[in-house]
Image (cartoon, rainbow, N blue to C red; front, side, top):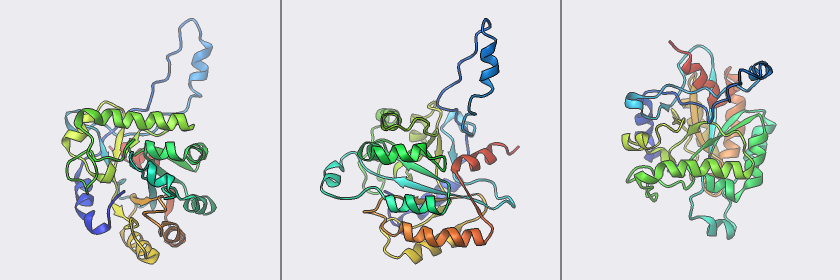
Length: 286
């Protein structure tokens, strides 16, 4: 879970300063054999790989925070489905780490969105994970398995050791597949938004693009939906990525805020898109 906005300002500045990069898809299409020419005809029908950016300096994992500021008004709403590896007892006791009302609102408002999901969340709510993964309005991306930090001193989160970082990301993808999410995107959001060169190096070569944001909603632990909506509306620019949450217990005002944000941004001429569309726009820039 991303802490309140006053503790995130520095992270936003850090994310904006990082260079974009490109990852590969999660797999390569099989090459048709020369003795089976018919396979070549069908190869063109295979779905395109999700857009990604090129690796950063020294092959480090690329980081994306927003698309180029063009005249086209596009904005991506992203929602972190947070749950740490040790919160099972709290869920069993009745704490809600999901938010079906928010997802229903996004569907009713016809808003495409990207959900950054932890593997632990997918295990706790497999039916919801599968439903999101099969809905073309949404795309599922990786938010780690454990939601443990990939750096030291990240808002009190437990820390993943460097030699366990790659395995933690892979474990999340495995949890998605077990829940029925067949096509998770090759995008990764660091827990708490905390990363450094060591973390980027640890997950390099996995074919993932790290996705940050340029607009902090402030919905984490918020009690005033109107304040959350104002903060988003004041921050959005063409190509923005907004970070929000779909965890009822820690972000109870998000649904109400979204119901205010969406019509106002549409009134201003914005079109809601998934992160993949913004990354695609960035990757096409000369």
